[in-house]
Image (cartoon, rainbow, N blue to C red):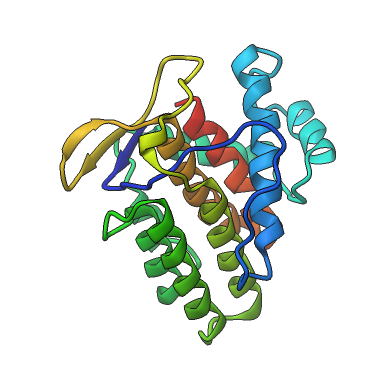
Length: 224
């Protein structure tokens, strides 16, 4: 999988945790539930307990993870195939989505981490972005979805200097960024995958599909 031009400072936690809350985001719990849900699924895929996104697998996790979501086999296949494509460009995916221009720009900015902020600065910037979403005139359901993605990014974020849990399959995505090209950490792949999968899911069937797509994208990013 090729992820183009992102430099997210991230380290994903894979066991149930209570994370530092984002005080100005009413969808903060969505980010916490996302991290805990993805940890459950990623562990099963890494150990071989789960091997694909079959209907049985999706039904099992939809009923057992904390994050309320909606996902279908077709939607999961669309997300995975899009992210695996050699021609994949996350900017094209976002620009061709059903989201408003405001939301498209904000999500790309979250993935890019344009100012190369460390963990603290990144979270502070997400707080500023939350206020921008809250005061925007985008549709209410889109606003809820974008706030959910901000919460997901907020709770994945952590300093790269702390290291990154090795990918069980010894793989990762490739980054073409401002400092050159090279393999991304597993956590960077997860974070970008979550937002991209979320955008694809939301464009297919709305809010709950957006959350389900974020899970699929995060798992695909982890195992890319």
